[in-house]
Amino acid sequence: MHRVNLRCTFGITPEDNIEPVVITRNITRPLSNGTVAITADDINDGTWDNCGLDMSTLKVSPAAFTCANMGPNTVTSPLPTRAAIRLRLP
Image 1: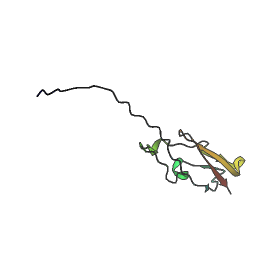
Image 2: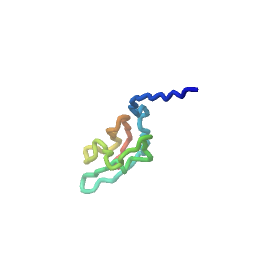
Image 3: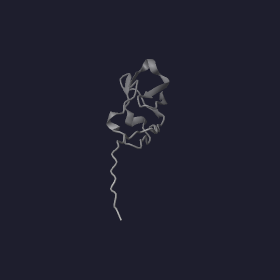
Image 4: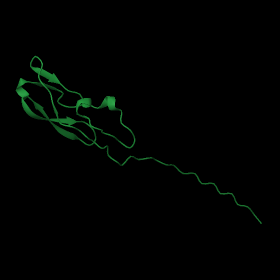
């Protein structure tokens, strides 16, 4: 009986084809001296990605508001999947 050892070499390229899940919450912030600033932490309500997200890199745009922005405002998060939320300034 003969034994045959076969060896095969191949490459694997992992791919992440699942987009992040963006979960946000609406917020209301009072102006202080005519301005208010927000961060991604203010609107994040459980955003996640199967390969992980560095939450410290999440940003929102715009992030600063003045009296000229009174009422609802749309804020965008620059993730591959964009999350739009409503911000109401009283």
